Length: 333
Ligand code: GLY
Image 1 (cartoon, rainbow, N blue to C red):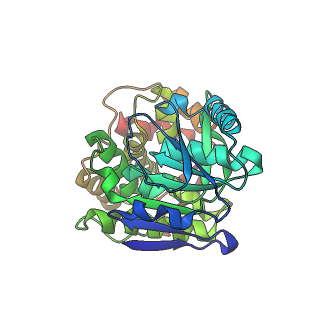
Image 2: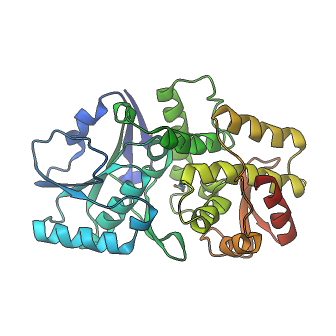
């Protein structure tokens, strides 16, 4: 089992990665915890052995259930059950579940301890780590949320045994991203080493910029287009699939801006191909609408801010020439 520490002063916490590490979860419960609220989804079907009094709270599936209504329902159910401020919440599932569970925990009684147990590759390498929580609005993804660090993140590789093919691809969309954020080349690595390498990169970025006032934005590489595509396609395109297209698109924007050459664009394609990821949508999209969605994305600060590759690596860049953003869409349609 590997342990990576997220260094955030008094909010530091461990991320465990390995086979069977779920069995250690109670070690991370606060002494005060009498009750454990497990937030999960029906289809996840993973049981955690506890000595404490626990109750399972199921939430709906998909991005449409990632809503403020789901959070309010959860909080009301917790009140009914008598969950107190000294108890603990566990988010057991994919990124949607851990985002919702941790958001509800962060506002319930003004903040409750939470442990994330991601059961998807995407959750393990990204969503469950770093303290971003949130839900969607009809206007955009993750537009309401908090920064609320968990007490621990438990990435038990055994939970991936039944992960559907499409979910693996989604996870590899995020893994591909780390190739451009300073990770070692993971193409020959086994699963545990890949997960650990991605987590190391993410935790070092989060440790330096917890609240995304600067460099943490690079974790959104490929995400500005991805969020717009997910919204435009009413979430029929999964997050990781959209990120893969978004990474290819970001490479094209960087190329048109003269930030990278053809060889670097080809490297992006090589990485995406290695993980079997589609980098084209296979259909025409309403480009004007996509561009208008960019400016609603929370990463757009002054004009349209994109995370782009370049000589100094991946960094946030203000793109003022909308024609370039439009032209680059042609390569991913
Ligand atoms: N998923 C991007 C971040 O945690 O900042």
